[in-house]
Length: 501
Image (tube, rainbow, N blue to C red):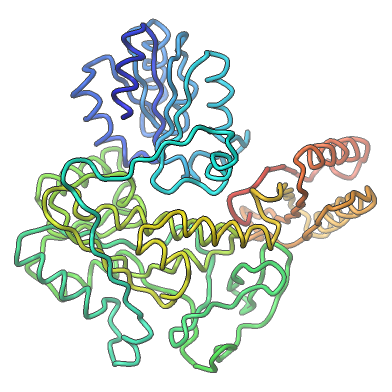
């Protein structure tokens, strides 16, 4: 679909920008586009040197290329005649800058597309709740692909309750169902992907007996475990000591999750010494060519099993992968983030979708301590509509975006006492504004309360109208500018932040 749209745009003498969320996707994506459009395609990403990026921008400005592909930074390619802008996997958080200047590539792309009279395409199998809501309200056009390309069918999905595995004496990180499926694929000389999502976690605590995590009673997000043994909410500051037994079922099997990709790789080697295993995570992709080397080797059949974090489940197309094992599906549910269920559904749906993309039937095994959670149930069924209906109800009950707008205010400084005083002063200014319908949360310690000897605090505001938050932001900026004691305090504002600061 993307290539056909781009082909028509190029025929009109115009150019196209294709945004992808991860550098890891560049290898396969660029190869596909090169095969169709030749050397009129270029790529932009952070692994290129400054000189290489500059050269590509010069080529674009000189009209030597028609298509630019890359992550967020490719958005600023100096094309003069843009015909279409495509944002693939539009739901990904990577499209929002977490550094100054904070911006959402989707919003910037919409402005740029409008200026050029270009089309803007947001593509995803699991659209963000915000995008889906706009489409349902008629603000966006909405087109659905209801079947896979060619003869491929959706994989068969099994949900394994790890609580039952524990009760039956299986203390391995692999369920019996997944072990059996891995052994079967090795015998058939087919490939397996083992996925573990470790990104975005901050010391969550859960019970292996009942599967429940310890959550904030005020914000309905998980509490994070800190070095002093306390559990804290990074939205409102709620704090309790780490319990010795599960508050829900009394079990002593309560702790933080410790498994990582290296542990999974070692366990695979122990259980299947004959298997050829590759691991793809931050450690193995630090070198400039790390992504391409691993993906190329796996795509060429030089490995039987690929173990990795979420970078292995986004958009890759390996026809010989017939099994995807999701080692701990509910890890992302424990993130201290109101989007936790959405992120979990998206990751699981994307992961399941890597199996059976060729002519061979696929299978996915989802291992979880919370098989009854709606994000896991709907992901197993690949039912986006059912997930959306549940999730938007939760957002309505809690007043989270996109139902209400949210503004994060992040403060940092070297002097803790001064920082706490300024944060309280800021909160007092907000309260004194007497804005009807405004919800103020905090000040509280940030998720990482101290970084590089600088302390960090956070305040959140929620209101149904963004214009109200904009007015409060302007008011606060005026108050700060007229006060002397803010010189050593660094402050940032962020709309609808992706996670706790």
